[in-house]
Image (spheres, each protein chain N blue to C red):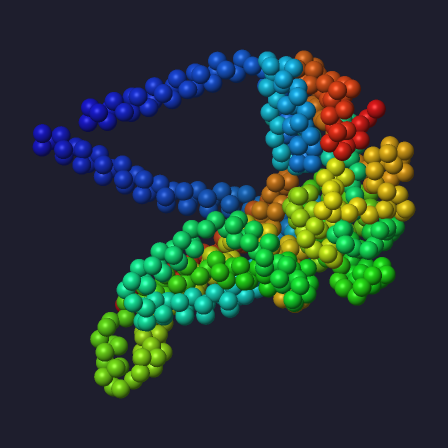
Length: 287
Length: 267
């Protein structure tokens, strides 16, 4: 009997290890696959012509994705401008001011926000945000502004939950010490609590950026997808993700490889962001 | 442990049986068709009617786009490829069958007072030379032009028929289907775009081009010029089931169905 349960224990451990490693394998496979499909074009057209090229006309041999890289960052920055203050305020309220009961209600509600499919956000954007922007600000409505608003809301859950955790991990003694010195609650928050949770909050912003830059469906629906670098916040724009999703259905040959090259650039950007968030900032917190 | 072995055995047996089952059901003959998303909805409709009369044949219709359809047909991965643009030089080895014609209409919001454009004006709008509605005699407001994405058959035909191979401007919005273009034009009073004639309804208004209304009648009379063929492509001369299906599409019944959908028959 003992022998039997021993083998079973081993078996379960073995199976679980295999599954755990398989996730690593998938990451590796995806990476290899994208590089394999995307890199030949870099070789053929030249890194400079792809990353710094201004013209995207893959059926005619132009593969410049510079405007899309700029647009992706613009959209991400816009989303951060809207999402970061809102998310941080919300996290501060949750960790410092709200009562236990309200917290129990608010946190699951925010997690639900993260669970809404992005196509629903896109749809809301098309139906409400786009006409509002068109009627009150001008332009076609399909614009940098609308996209930033929608993405700003979409990255809220990421920002809130991670900043909330880092605010909560500030020891109670810090706050008590500050109160003992005669500081008010708000003084305590912005002079003591926020500086001690700084790196976690920054990490939440960067992970929020990662989410915004990788978002696809909602962006295609409301960004307008024009190929030029937007000249104002009311101009349409196309992001890297949007470019892939928009054209993949029809692409063959070099065009298809061009889309994979877009994917390679996107992958590199997201890996850098994640690296900064995980190793550059979070590690400091642990130390 | 025994139970676990039992589960594994059960699963593998089920797997084996299901493979076997598929094998026996594939005695039905299957015709696979893939390609242009503009032709797809109409081909699907045809296949529904066709399968009622020929229960022994299964018609499997997929999208993918004109270029993908042509490629798939060349590689022999499908029986029939669908294309909504003319074949290019290196694609002419395929056997092509024109199943019908489709007009591309240039559409605006129903409240837009402009009724007609010349072909040149349309070209100037999409090449970015005309940027403001005031240049066409309406209010001072930027034109929100919408085009299709690179690789689309509709865009390919539009570039050929309207743009004269001039380039579509970079600053113009891009949507990835006829439906999305229509949605943008239907909701934005200052928008202009182009979609299949069959999809025009009261939510958008088709413009007269060079004084000609885009209607089935005018296309048949060769008055309206922005017309593209819908093509079926086969690697060899069609035979057996493929021939039966294509004959059905070209028959009077088949063409009637297509005409009811707003396309222009070959007869």
